[in-house]
Amino acid sequence: MAKDIFVNVELGEKRVVIVDDNRMEEFYIERPQDKTIVGNIYKGIISAVIPSINGAFVDIGMAKNGFLYLTEIEGSYEFDDQMDKNGQPPQQGQHHQQRPPRNKLFNNIKKGQEVLVQVVKESFGTKGPRLSCHIGIPGRYLVVMPLDNRIGVSRRIEEEQERKKLRQILREAHLPDDIGFIIRTVAQGKAKQDLIRDANYLIKMWRNIERQYKRKKAPCLVYEELDLVLRVIRDSFSADFHKLTVDSKPEFYRIHNFMRAFMGDLRRKVDFYRGPDLFGERDVEKQVSKVFEKKIYLKSKAYIIIEPTEGLVVIDVNSGGFKEKIDQEEAAFKINCESAVEAAHQLKLRDLGGIIVIDFIDMEKEGHRREVLRVLKQALSEDRAKYDVLGISKFGLVEMTRERIHNTVQTLSFQDCPYCLGKGKVKSPKTMAIYALKELRKHLHGKSLRQVELSAHPAVVDELTQNKESLKQVEHNYRTRINLNPSPALRIEDIAIT
Image (cartoon, rainbow, N blue to C red; front, side):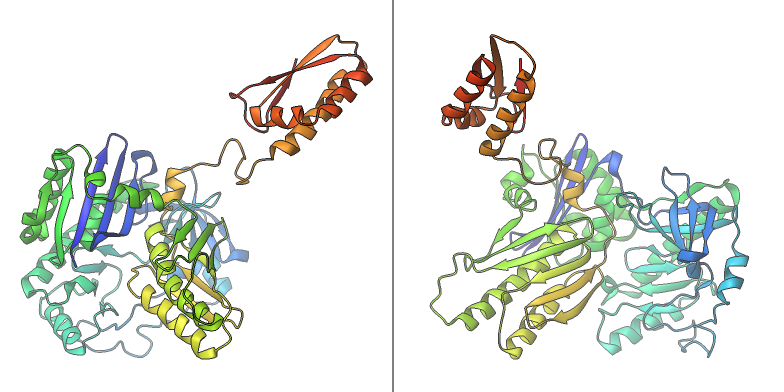
Protein backbone atom coordinates (compact mmCIF):
# COMPACT_ATOMS: atom_id res chain seq x y z
CA MET A 1 0.00 0.00 0.00
CA ALA A 2 1.23 3.51 -0.88
CA LYS A 3 1.37 5.91 2.06
CA ASP A 4 1.64 9.65 1.40
CA ILE A 5 1.59 12.91 3.33
CA PHE A 6 0.03 15.97 1.69
CA VAL A 7 0.62 19.46 3.11
CA ASN A 8 -1.62 22.33 2.01
CA VAL A 9 -0.57 25.86 3.06
CA GLU A 10 -2.99 28.79 2.79
CA LEU A 11 -2.69 32.35 4.05
CA GLY A 12 -4.25 31.65 7.45
CA GLU A 13 -4.20 27.88 7.67
CA LYS A 14 -2.08 24.75 7.28
CA ARG A 15 -3.65 21.36 6.61
CA VAL A 16 -1.91 17.99 6.75
CA VAL A 17 -3.37 14.71 5.51
CA ILE A 18 -1.87 11.23 5.84
CA VAL A 19 -3.18 8.88 3.15
CA ASP A 20 -2.80 5.11 2.94
CA ASP A 21 -3.71 3.55 -0.41
CA ASN A 22 -5.72 6.69 -1.31
CA ARG A 23 -7.74 6.50 1.92
CA MET A 24 -7.35 9.37 4.38
CA GLU A 25 -6.08 8.04 7.71
CA GLU A 26 -5.23 11.24 9.59
CA PHE A 27 -6.23 14.86 9.13
CA TYR A 28 -4.95 17.94 10.98
CA ILE A 29 -5.54 21.68 10.82
CA GLU A 30 -3.47 24.47 12.35
CA ARG A 31 -4.14 28.21 12.30
CA PRO A 32 -1.82 30.86 13.76
CA GLN A 33 -4.42 32.07 16.26
CA ASP A 34 -5.29 28.50 17.32
CA LYS A 35 -1.80 27.03 17.47
CA THR A 36 -1.59 24.24 20.03
CA ILE A 37 0.38 24.68 23.24
CA VAL A 38 0.51 20.94 23.99
CA GLY A 39 4.16 19.98 24.52
CA ASN A 40 5.23 23.51 25.46
CA ILE A 41 7.27 23.85 28.65
CA TYR A 42 6.75 26.81 30.98
CA LYS A 43 8.31 28.27 34.07
CA GLY A 44 5.11 28.82 36.00
CA ILE A 45 3.98 30.24 39.32
CA ILE A 46 1.51 28.41 41.55
CA SER A 47 -1.41 30.80 41.94
CA ALA A 48 -3.63 28.64 44.17
CA VAL A 49 -3.49 25.28 45.96
CA ILE A 50 -6.86 23.49 46.29
CA PRO A 51 -6.54 20.43 48.59
CA SER A 52 -10.18 19.42 48.05
CA ILE A 53 -9.47 18.59 44.39
CA ASN A 54 -5.88 17.49 44.98
CA GLY A 55 -4.62 20.12 42.59
CA ALA A 56 -3.07 23.50 42.03
CA PHE A 57 -3.63 26.25 39.50
CA VAL A 58 -0.49 27.47 37.79
CA ASP A 59 0.02 30.82 36.08
CA ILE A 60 1.96 30.15 32.86
CA GLY A 61 1.45 33.61 31.41
CA MET A 62 -1.73 32.83 29.45
CA ALA A 63 -5.37 33.94 29.76
CA LYS A 64 -6.32 30.76 31.65
CA ASN A 65 -4.31 29.23 34.47
CA GLY A 66 -3.23 25.63 33.96
CA PHE A 67 -4.25 22.79 36.28
CA LEU A 68 -1.66 20.55 37.93
CA TYR A 69 -2.35 17.51 40.12
CA LEU A 70 -0.39 17.83 43.35
CA THR A 71 0.77 14.22 43.23
CA GLU A 72 2.59 14.96 39.97
CA ILE A 73 4.84 17.46 41.71
CA GLU A 74 6.42 14.89 44.00
CA GLY A 75 5.38 11.72 42.15
CA SER A 76 7.88 9.46 40.39
CA TYR A 77 8.12 8.66 36.67
CA GLU A 78 6.28 5.59 35.54
CA PHE A 79 6.62 4.18 32.05
CA ASP A 80 6.81 0.67 30.74
CA ASP A 81 9.95 -1.46 30.72
CA GLN A 82 12.08 0.88 32.84
CA MET A 83 15.74 0.12 33.50
CA ASP A 84 18.57 2.05 35.04
CA LYS A 85 21.67 2.96 33.00
CA ASN A 86 23.26 -0.39 33.77
CA GLY A 87 20.31 -2.25 32.34
CA GLN A 88 19.03 -3.34 35.74
CA PRO A 89 15.51 -2.91 37.15
CA PRO A 90 15.21 -0.12 39.72
CA GLN A 91 16.18 -1.05 43.27
CA GLN A 92 13.33 -1.64 45.67
CA GLY A 93 12.00 1.75 46.63
CA GLN A 94 14.00 3.50 43.92
CA HIS A 95 11.24 3.60 41.31
CA HIS A 96 8.01 3.72 43.27
CA GLN A 97 8.95 6.29 45.83
CA GLN A 98 6.66 6.52 48.82
CA ARG A 99 4.64 9.69 48.48
CA PRO A 100 4.31 11.96 51.50
CA PRO A 101 1.01 12.06 53.40
CA ARG A 102 -1.60 14.37 51.85
CA ASN A 103 -1.31 17.04 54.52
CA LYS A 104 2.50 17.11 54.22
CA LEU A 105 2.28 17.32 50.44
CA PHE A 106 -0.09 20.28 50.64
CA ASN A 107 2.15 22.04 53.18
CA ASN A 108 5.18 21.68 50.89
CA ILE A 109 3.46 23.39 47.96
CA LYS A 110 2.89 27.10 48.40
CA LYS A 111 1.23 29.86 46.48
CA GLY A 112 3.89 31.83 44.61
CA GLN A 113 6.17 28.79 44.23
CA GLU A 114 7.92 28.48 40.85
CA VAL A 115 7.55 25.20 39.00
CA LEU A 116 8.65 23.72 35.67
CA VAL A 117 5.59 22.33 33.86
CA GLN A 118 4.67 20.92 30.47
CA VAL A 119 1.26 21.21 28.82
CA VAL A 120 -0.22 17.74 28.27
CA LYS A 121 -3.79 18.66 27.30
CA GLU A 122 -5.33 21.62 25.49
CA SER A 123 -7.85 23.98 27.08
CA PHE A 124 -11.45 22.80 26.62
CA GLY A 125 -14.42 25.09 27.17
CA THR A 126 -13.95 26.95 30.44
CA LYS A 127 -11.14 24.64 31.58
CA GLY A 128 -7.52 25.72 31.33
CA PRO A 129 -4.74 23.47 30.01
CA ARG A 130 -3.68 20.35 31.92
CA LEU A 131 -0.10 20.50 33.15
CA SER A 132 2.47 17.96 34.26
CA CYS A 133 5.83 18.08 36.02
CA HIS A 134 6.82 14.88 34.22
CA ILE A 135 8.76 16.53 31.40
CA GLY A 136 9.15 14.60 28.14
CA ILE A 137 10.63 16.06 24.94
CA PRO A 138 10.22 13.93 21.81
CA GLY A 139 12.85 13.63 19.14
CA ARG A 140 12.81 11.50 16.02
CA TYR A 141 13.67 8.17 17.68
CA LEU A 142 13.75 8.98 21.39
CA VAL A 143 11.89 10.90 24.07
CA VAL A 144 14.18 12.52 26.63
CA MET A 145 12.97 12.35 30.25
CA PRO A 146 15.29 14.94 31.81
CA LEU A 147 14.16 14.54 35.41
CA ASP A 148 14.61 10.76 35.41
CA ASN A 149 17.53 8.42 34.72
CA ARG A 150 16.00 5.26 33.33
CA ILE A 151 15.56 3.80 29.87
CA GLY A 152 12.13 2.78 28.56
CA VAL A 153 11.10 1.03 25.35
CA SER A 154 7.84 1.55 23.49
CA ARG A 155 5.31 -1.23 24.06
CA ARG A 156 4.77 -1.40 20.31
CA ILE A 157 8.26 -2.82 19.83
CA GLU A 158 7.27 -6.37 20.69
CA GLU A 159 10.32 -8.43 19.68
CA GLU A 160 12.40 -8.96 22.82
CA GLN A 161 15.70 -9.22 20.95
CA GLU A 162 15.12 -5.83 19.33
CA ARG A 163 14.20 -4.28 22.69
CA LYS A 164 17.44 -5.55 24.25
CA LYS A 165 19.51 -4.31 21.31
CA LEU A 166 18.05 -0.80 21.47
CA ARG A 167 18.53 -0.57 25.23
CA GLN A 168 22.12 -1.78 24.88
CA ILE A 169 22.87 0.96 22.32
CA LEU A 170 21.85 3.67 24.79
CA ARG A 171 23.62 2.03 27.74
CA GLU A 172 26.91 1.98 25.81
CA ALA A 173 26.56 5.55 24.49
CA HIS A 174 28.01 7.22 27.63
CA LEU A 175 25.02 9.52 28.03
CA PRO A 176 24.60 11.75 31.11
CA ASP A 177 23.53 9.81 34.20
CA ASP A 178 20.90 12.35 35.22
CA ILE A 179 18.82 11.99 32.04
CA GLY A 180 16.52 9.17 30.97
CA PHE A 181 15.08 8.17 27.61
CA ILE A 182 12.13 6.34 26.09
CA ILE A 183 12.91 4.59 22.82
CA ARG A 184 10.11 5.30 20.35
CA THR A 185 8.51 2.75 18.02
CA VAL A 186 10.07 4.38 14.96
CA ALA A 187 13.55 3.51 16.33
CA GLN A 188 12.98 -0.15 15.53
CA GLY A 189 15.69 -1.38 13.16
CA LYS A 190 17.60 1.92 13.16
CA ALA A 191 21.37 2.17 13.26
CA LYS A 192 23.34 3.02 16.40
CA GLN A 193 24.51 6.38 15.04
CA ASP A 194 20.90 7.45 14.35
CA LEU A 195 19.90 6.90 17.98
CA ILE A 196 23.02 8.52 19.41
CA ARG A 197 22.64 11.55 17.14
CA ASP A 198 19.04 11.94 18.30
CA ALA A 199 20.06 11.54 21.96
CA ASN A 200 22.74 14.23 21.68
CA TYR A 201 20.30 16.57 19.92
CA LEU A 202 17.77 16.14 22.76
CA ILE A 203 20.42 16.57 25.47
CA LYS A 204 21.48 19.90 23.93
CA MET A 205 17.86 20.96 23.77
CA TRP A 206 17.34 20.12 27.46
CA ARG A 207 20.49 21.97 28.54
CA ASN A 208 19.19 25.02 26.71
CA ILE A 209 15.84 24.70 28.54
CA GLU A 210 17.75 24.58 31.84
CA ARG A 211 19.52 27.81 30.94
CA GLN A 212 16.26 29.46 29.94
CA TYR A 213 14.63 28.38 33.20
CA LYS A 214 17.42 29.94 35.29
CA ARG A 215 17.62 33.12 33.25
CA LYS A 216 13.97 34.00 32.63
CA LYS A 217 11.41 35.41 35.06
CA ALA A 218 8.21 33.43 35.66
CA PRO A 219 5.68 33.06 34.19
CA CYS A 220 7.32 32.44 30.83
CA LEU A 221 7.73 29.99 27.97
CA VAL A 222 11.04 28.10 28.03
CA TYR A 223 10.42 25.57 25.24
CA GLU A 224 7.97 25.62 22.34
CA GLU A 225 6.86 22.39 20.68
CA LEU A 226 7.17 22.08 16.92
CA ASP A 227 4.33 23.35 14.76
CA LEU A 228 1.89 20.99 13.03
CA VAL A 229 3.84 20.27 9.83
CA LEU A 230 7.18 19.57 11.48
CA ARG A 231 5.52 17.60 14.28
CA VAL A 232 3.79 15.26 11.80
CA ILE A 233 7.08 14.78 9.94
CA ARG A 234 8.95 13.99 13.16
CA ASP A 235 6.30 11.58 14.47
CA SER A 236 5.01 9.91 11.30
CA PHE A 237 7.21 10.32 8.23
CA SER A 238 9.41 7.29 7.61
CA ALA A 239 10.89 5.13 4.87
CA ASP A 240 7.51 3.36 4.59
CA PHE A 241 6.05 6.46 2.94
CA HIS A 242 6.03 6.99 -0.79
CA LYS A 243 6.18 10.81 -0.80
CA LEU A 244 5.59 13.95 1.21
CA THR A 245 4.09 16.57 -1.10
CA VAL A 246 3.75 20.25 -0.14
CA ASP A 247 2.21 23.07 -2.18
CA SER A 248 4.19 25.97 -0.68
CA LYS A 249 7.78 26.73 -1.73
CA PRO A 250 8.75 28.43 1.59
CA GLU A 251 7.29 25.46 3.48
CA PHE A 252 9.13 23.08 1.15
CA TYR A 253 12.48 24.72 2.02
CA ARG A 254 11.60 24.86 5.73
CA ILE A 255 10.86 21.12 5.72
CA HIS A 256 14.17 20.40 3.97
CA ASN A 257 16.10 22.43 6.54
CA PHE A 258 14.36 20.65 9.41
CA MET A 259 14.98 17.18 7.97
CA ARG A 260 18.65 17.90 7.33
CA ALA A 261 19.28 17.72 11.10
CA PHE A 262 18.32 14.10 11.76
CA MET A 263 16.45 12.49 8.88
CA GLY A 264 18.42 13.63 5.84
CA ASP A 265 17.99 10.31 4.05
CA LEU A 266 14.25 11.05 3.62
CA ARG A 267 14.65 14.48 2.02
CA ARG A 268 14.59 12.92 -1.44
CA LYS A 269 10.99 11.85 -0.73
CA VAL A 270 9.82 15.48 -0.31
CA ASP A 271 8.20 16.99 -3.43
CA PHE A 272 7.05 20.52 -4.23
CA TYR A 273 3.61 20.62 -5.90
CA ARG A 274 3.31 23.34 -8.56
CA GLY A 275 -0.36 22.96 -9.46
CA PRO A 276 -3.35 25.02 -8.27
CA ASP A 277 -5.12 22.48 -6.02
CA LEU A 278 -3.10 19.72 -4.30
CA PHE A 279 -5.95 18.26 -2.23
CA GLY A 280 -8.38 18.37 -5.17
CA GLU A 281 -5.99 16.74 -7.64
CA ARG A 282 -5.07 13.95 -5.20
CA ASP A 283 -8.75 13.24 -4.40
CA VAL A 284 -8.34 14.34 -0.80
CA GLU A 285 -10.67 17.37 -0.59
CA LYS A 286 -13.81 15.23 -0.90
CA GLN A 287 -12.60 13.03 1.94
CA VAL A 288 -11.81 16.10 4.06
CA SER A 289 -15.36 17.42 3.63
CA LYS A 290 -16.78 14.11 4.85
CA VAL A 291 -14.85 14.43 8.13
CA PHE A 292 -17.49 16.90 9.26
CA GLU A 293 -20.52 14.79 8.36
CA LYS A 294 -22.52 13.09 11.10
CA LYS A 295 -23.56 10.10 8.99
CA ILE A 296 -20.89 7.78 7.54
CA TYR A 297 -22.01 5.10 5.07
CA LEU A 298 -20.29 1.73 4.97
CA LYS A 299 -19.70 -0.52 1.96
CA SER A 300 -22.62 -2.73 3.00
CA LYS A 301 -24.97 0.33 2.85
CA ALA A 302 -25.27 0.31 6.63
CA TYR A 303 -24.12 3.50 8.37
CA ILE A 304 -22.94 4.96 11.64
CA ILE A 305 -23.92 8.32 13.15
CA ILE A 306 -21.34 10.24 15.21
CA GLU A 307 -22.65 12.77 17.74
CA PRO A 308 -19.89 14.58 19.68
CA THR A 309 -21.04 16.50 22.76
CA GLU A 310 -19.05 18.43 25.32
CA GLY A 311 -19.08 15.51 27.76
CA LEU A 312 -18.92 12.44 25.53
CA VAL A 313 -19.11 11.06 21.99
CA VAL A 314 -21.99 8.80 20.95
CA ILE A 315 -21.66 6.50 17.93
CA ASP A 316 -24.86 4.80 16.76
CA VAL A 317 -24.79 1.82 14.39
CA ASN A 318 -27.71 1.43 11.94
CA SER A 319 -28.51 -1.25 9.36
CA GLY A 320 -29.61 1.38 6.79
CA GLY A 321 -29.77 -0.11 3.29
CA PHE A 322 -28.12 -3.44 4.20
CA LYS A 323 -29.85 -5.98 1.93
CA GLU A 324 -27.88 -9.20 2.24
CA LYS A 325 -30.29 -12.10 2.67
CA ILE A 326 -29.11 -13.64 5.95
CA ASP A 327 -30.86 -14.05 9.30
CA GLN A 328 -31.12 -11.13 11.71
CA GLU A 329 -28.36 -12.30 14.08
CA GLU A 330 -25.82 -12.81 11.28
CA ALA A 331 -26.77 -9.48 9.69
CA ALA A 332 -26.29 -7.66 13.01
CA PHE A 333 -22.92 -9.39 13.53
CA LYS A 334 -21.66 -8.53 10.03
CA ILE A 335 -22.77 -4.87 10.26
CA ASN A 336 -21.28 -4.50 13.75
CA CYS A 337 -17.88 -5.85 12.67
CA GLU A 338 -17.77 -3.45 9.73
CA SER A 339 -18.92 -0.58 11.96
CA ALA A 340 -16.29 -1.35 14.62
CA VAL A 341 -13.49 -0.88 12.08
CA GLU A 342 -15.01 2.35 10.75
CA ALA A 343 -15.69 3.73 14.25
CA ALA A 344 -12.03 3.27 15.21
CA HIS A 345 -10.97 4.93 11.95
CA GLN A 346 -13.28 7.92 12.50
CA LEU A 347 -12.13 8.42 16.11
CA LYS A 348 -8.54 8.74 14.89
CA LEU A 349 -9.44 10.79 11.81
CA ARG A 350 -11.53 13.32 13.78
CA ASP A 351 -9.27 13.10 16.85
CA LEU A 352 -12.28 12.60 19.11
CA GLY A 353 -11.63 11.86 22.78
CA GLY A 354 -13.04 11.64 26.26
CA ILE A 355 -15.83 9.20 27.07
CA ILE A 356 -17.12 7.34 24.01
CA VAL A 357 -20.21 5.12 23.82
CA ILE A 358 -20.77 2.91 20.75
CA ASP A 359 -24.30 1.54 20.35
CA PHE A 360 -23.97 -1.59 18.22
CA ILE A 361 -26.98 -3.49 16.89
CA ASP A 362 -28.22 -6.04 19.46
CA MET A 363 -26.76 -9.55 19.15
CA GLU A 364 -28.00 -12.62 20.98
CA LYS A 365 -24.84 -14.74 20.76
CA GLU A 366 -22.12 -14.07 23.32
CA GLY A 367 -19.50 -15.27 20.82
CA HIS A 368 -20.58 -12.61 18.35
CA ARG A 369 -20.34 -9.89 21.00
CA ARG A 370 -16.81 -11.00 21.95
CA GLU A 371 -15.73 -11.05 18.31
CA VAL A 372 -17.07 -7.52 17.66
CA LEU A 373 -15.13 -6.32 20.71
CA ARG A 374 -11.98 -8.04 19.41
CA VAL A 375 -12.40 -6.41 15.99
CA LEU A 376 -12.81 -3.00 17.63
CA LYS A 377 -9.69 -3.43 19.77
CA GLN A 378 -7.69 -4.64 16.77
CA ALA A 379 -8.75 -1.57 14.78
CA LEU A 380 -7.88 0.71 17.71
CA SER A 381 -4.41 -0.81 18.04
CA GLU A 382 -3.25 1.33 15.08
CA ASP A 383 -4.18 4.50 17.00
CA ARG A 384 -1.30 6.39 18.67
CA ALA A 385 -3.67 7.91 21.24
CA LYS A 386 -4.17 6.04 24.52
CA TYR A 387 -7.52 4.31 24.90
CA ASP A 388 -9.31 1.98 27.29
CA VAL A 389 -12.21 -0.28 26.25
CA LEU A 390 -14.37 -1.48 29.14
CA GLY A 391 -16.29 -4.23 27.35
CA ILE A 392 -19.55 -4.86 25.51
CA SER A 393 -22.93 -5.29 27.20
CA LYS A 394 -25.70 -7.71 26.18
CA PHE A 395 -27.46 -4.71 24.63
CA GLY A 396 -24.49 -4.07 22.33
CA LEU A 397 -23.18 -1.00 24.16
CA VAL A 398 -19.40 -0.45 24.30
CA GLU A 399 -18.00 2.11 26.73
CA MET A 400 -14.48 3.34 26.15
CA THR A 401 -12.23 6.32 26.68
CA ARG A 402 -9.76 7.86 24.26
CA GLU A 403 -7.05 10.32 25.10
CA ARG A 404 -8.13 13.86 24.29
CA ILE A 405 -5.14 16.20 23.84
CA HIS A 406 -5.83 18.70 21.07
CA ASN A 407 -8.95 20.55 20.00
CA THR A 408 -10.75 18.56 17.31
CA VAL A 409 -10.73 19.60 13.65
CA GLN A 410 -14.48 20.19 14.00
CA THR A 411 -13.92 22.62 16.90
CA LEU A 412 -11.34 24.53 14.84
CA SER A 413 -13.47 24.61 11.69
CA PHE A 414 -16.99 25.30 12.97
CA GLN A 415 -18.89 27.51 15.39
CA ASP A 416 -22.39 27.20 16.81
CA CYS A 417 -25.03 27.95 14.21
CA PRO A 418 -26.27 31.55 14.68
CA TYR A 419 -29.72 30.46 13.51
CA CYS A 420 -30.34 27.48 15.77
CA LEU A 421 -27.84 28.67 18.46
CA GLY A 422 -26.23 25.26 18.68
CA LYS A 423 -29.46 23.28 19.11
CA GLY A 424 -29.01 21.62 15.74
CA LYS A 425 -32.69 22.25 14.88
CA VAL A 426 -34.92 25.16 13.90
CA LYS A 427 -38.68 25.55 14.33
CA SER A 428 -40.84 24.31 11.48
CA PRO A 429 -42.77 26.73 9.22
CA LYS A 430 -46.01 25.45 10.76
CA THR A 431 -44.80 26.26 14.27
CA MET A 432 -43.67 29.72 13.16
CA ALA A 433 -46.99 30.41 11.43
CA ILE A 434 -48.83 29.75 14.69
CA TYR A 435 -46.31 31.92 16.54
CA ALA A 436 -46.74 34.75 13.98
CA LEU A 437 -50.50 34.83 14.60
CA LYS A 438 -49.92 35.10 18.34
CA GLU A 439 -47.51 37.98 17.80
CA LEU A 440 -50.03 39.71 15.51
CA ARG A 441 -52.67 39.61 18.26
CA LYS A 442 -50.20 41.04 20.77
CA HIS A 443 -49.21 43.81 18.35
CA LEU A 444 -52.84 44.77 17.58
CA HIS A 445 -54.18 44.56 21.12
CA GLY A 446 -55.41 47.94 22.33
CA LYS A 447 -54.63 49.65 19.03
CA SER A 448 -56.71 50.87 16.11
CA LEU A 449 -54.72 50.21 12.94
CA ARG A 450 -56.20 50.18 9.44
CA GLN A 451 -53.53 47.74 8.22
CA VAL A 452 -50.34 45.95 9.30
CA GLU A 453 -47.57 44.23 7.36
CA LEU A 454 -46.20 40.85 8.48
CA SER A 455 -42.81 39.96 6.98
CA ALA A 456 -41.61 36.36 7.31
CA HIS A 457 -39.65 33.65 5.54
CA PRO A 458 -41.49 32.49 2.36
CA ALA A 459 -42.13 29.03 3.87
CA VAL A 460 -43.85 30.64 6.87
CA VAL A 461 -45.93 32.90 4.61
CA ASP A 462 -47.02 29.80 2.64
CA GLU A 463 -48.25 28.20 5.84
CA LEU A 464 -50.20 31.36 6.75
CA THR A 465 -51.86 31.63 3.34
CA GLN A 466 -52.94 27.99 3.56
CA ASN A 467 -54.74 28.85 6.78
CA LYS A 468 -56.71 31.90 5.57
CA GLU A 469 -59.48 31.39 8.10
CA SER A 470 -57.15 32.21 11.00
CA LEU A 471 -55.94 35.37 9.26
CA LYS A 472 -59.50 36.48 8.49
CA GLN A 473 -60.44 35.89 12.12
CA VAL A 474 -57.65 38.21 13.32
CA GLU A 475 -58.60 40.84 10.72
CA HIS A 476 -62.26 40.65 11.78
CA ASN A 477 -61.53 40.83 15.54
CA TYR A 478 -59.18 43.83 15.26
CA ARG A 479 -60.84 45.52 12.24
CA THR A 480 -57.63 45.68 10.28
CA ARG A 481 -56.06 44.41 7.06
CA ILE A 482 -53.04 42.09 7.20
CA ASN A 483 -50.54 42.23 4.34
CA LEU A 484 -48.16 39.28 4.10
CA ASN A 485 -44.64 39.93 2.83
CA PRO A 486 -42.51 36.86 1.97
CA SER A 487 -38.88 37.82 2.62
CA PRO A 488 -36.14 35.35 1.67
CA ALA A 489 -33.66 37.48 3.65
CA LEU A 490 -35.36 36.49 6.90
CA ARG A 491 -34.57 33.27 8.74
CA ILE A 492 -37.27 30.69 9.45
CA GLU A 493 -37.54 31.82 13.08
CA ASP A 494 -37.65 35.58 12.28
CA ILE A 495 -40.79 37.66 11.79
CA ALA A 496 -41.28 41.41 11.56
CA ILE A 497 -44.57 43.29 12.11
CA THR A 498 -44.90 46.93 10.96
